[in-house]
Structure formats: C-alpha cells, structure tokens
Image (cartoon, rainbow over all chains, first blue to last red; front, side, top):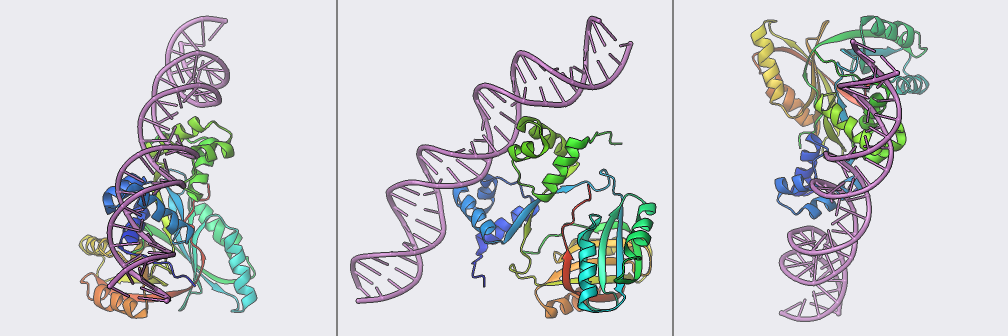
Length: 155
Length: 155
DNA sequence: GAAGAAATGCATGAATAATGCGCAGGTTGA
DNA sequence: TCAACCTGCGCATTATTCATGCATTTCTTC
C-alpha cells in the first residue's frame, strides 16, 4: 500500500514537528542540517503522503472551562455489529468525548471525557450514556492528576 | 489568577486552530469575520496568555511503526508520596507512554502506551513496569478499534 | 458628554513558504 | 564500463503570510 520511505532526516523532522508544529522551515533546517528548502519539500511530502495527518493547537483545558477529565469504561448490552455501530455513532456525536477506544478484556470501551464539573459528568453518564440502547454498564473514574498527556510517538 | 477574557471571537479562533493548527490568519479571518491582522493579534494574545499551549503535528502512528495501542492500568505497591513520585518519574522517562493519569477508584493509574507489536508490549510490561519498585500490579488491554482520538475540547 | 482606553482594519515591511534551476550523486540498462 | 536518467540537494528568487504602525472607531469610565 504505502511505500513511502522515511529516512533519518524525515524521522527527525517528524519528531520536531510533533513537539512543535509551528517550527519554521528555517528552524527545522538548523536542527536537522538540511537547507530550509529541503525541509520545506520534505515536510510537504510527509503531509501529502499522510505521515503528517495534520496540525492541532493544544489548548488550556482548565482555563477554557474543563477542569474535570474522566475515564469512563462502558460495557455494551449485547455484542453485535449493530450495537457496536450504534455506540460508535453515539460517541462520534458527543463533543465532550475526546478519545474513545474499543478494547480487549473486561471493558468493551474506554472513553476520555472532559466536563466542567461533577454535575455535568453525572448528567453525561445518566442522561446520555446509560439511557442509550446499546449501553449496559458504565463505570466512571475521575483523573486526580495528569502525569503525561503529550500523545507523542516515540520516534 | 488568570483574568484573560475569552469572547466569542476568541473561542471561535481557538476552536478552528484546535482543528487545524496551521490555518493562516487570512483563513481565520474569513471564518470569524475579523480582519487578518486582528486574528493575528488575538492568536498572539491567546498564545502569550497560555490559552494556546502550543501546536503539534499529528502523525500516522501505524505507518510510523506503532500499530499497537495499549491501555495499561497500574496499581502501586503502597500509596505514599515517595512511591507516587517514583512512578511519575518512571512514566516521564518512557517515550512509549503517550498519556498517563492518576485516577479515583480501583486503578491507581491508567496509561496509554504505543508499541510496535505484542512482543514489545510484553517486554514493556515485564521488563519495565512490573520490576519497578513502586508497581504492584499491572493490567493490560489492547485497543481493538479507535472510535475517536481527536483530543479536542468541546468549545 | 468628554476623555481615555481598547479594539479595529488598512497598508506596509519583515518573515516565511514554496519553487525554479543547476549541480552532485546514485541507479539502471545496454 | 559508460551514458542516460532519476532523485535529492542548496542557492536564489518569487509568492505568501505574519506582524506592526497608524488612523479611526468603539467601548468604558467619570
């Protein structure tokens, strides 16, 4: 499928942009010892080939009104493709769900959900998740401390 | 502490940059109906005030060699500040840990860990996590499907 | 209502991104 | 082995974007 080659220069560029997506081509060139035009071309290629999927601004969650991070595990009522699809559709429509994964093991899904307070968390669970036809069981844990949140790949 | 005011324009700018951190000031201006210079100034202000904490390139995890995402829950041996600090230090030093949170409830910590394969996952758990003096118990689940991974705040 | 402060858009200069071009090095096929 | 072709490279240039000065408008305070 993909035969894009990633050499050490590419890898270094990816690593740098992963950490700071607004580095200029000149910044990159100083750090990888290529010209800025070569860095521009490589970055473009990495974007076009999809190795760089996009750029995101990282926002201050707490100051924007979301002090609470919650890890919610969900068990489905039944494990058929319809239910799975219904749940996936549900999750896609909920902006407070930042991440959602289907897992091996005892929990079917795990969600990372941000809320302004406990009240809205409670509401989210009891008014949105639990009443949904695909959901059987929900377990909620609140994040006490964030040790790491970079989401960075270990290139 | 912070008395930065965030009006509707700011909020819209934040939302747009959260989705695409490389939008030009001109792009922003078209979408929020302010001039590009005002968008530039507001973006600068939002950055300086820390509401925009930075920018990140999003990379293709699978094509860069990390097809496996793992959710690992960890219980500490004892719950004292030394142990918690030791564990935090450990996590900070492990590049394959993308996210790590201390939680309420039965699991002390939850980690999101990327690995190239099951073998390296197994190695990570048995050679890195479990032998650590602070760690008592480790439970691993593998992500079968990613429903959502935007990490976006619901502004 | 007046004065001062803050926000705004236009115009402009500075900074950055992208691209043309010639060159160097590597690969392929005869 | 050699010539032709391809790819990657940096320099120089062009195109685009960012940041800022300035005059004006809008908002706030007394």
